[in-house]
Amino acid sequence: MLKRKDKLLQKELESTDVGPSSTETAPAKNWVQDTPLWMVGTAIAIALGAYHFATSFVGIPQAWL
Image (cartoon, rainbow, N blue to C red; front, side, top):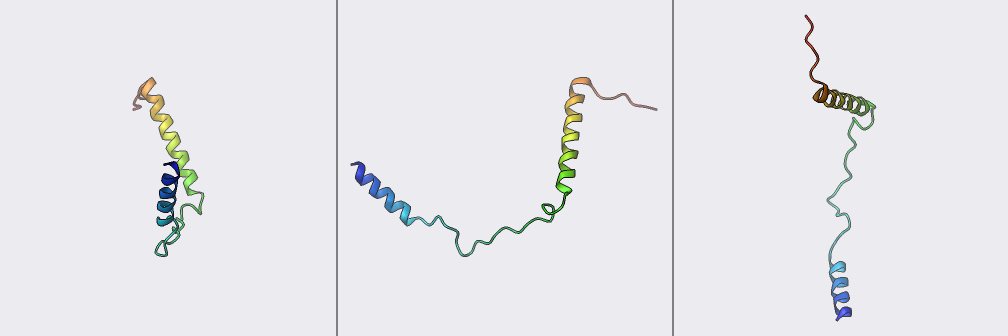
């Protein structure tokens, strides 16, 4: 029984096309990936996240006149 299942599984694996098809193309590189702009955006996002996390515990800063 086990051999029959193995043969059926092997046939199923051989019949499926798992390779890249001829219609697929390589994804185009984004211009942001070629520049250090993504590092600046990441730093800003981390800083804003840390600010909001801190103010959730301490409270909002006092308004200055």
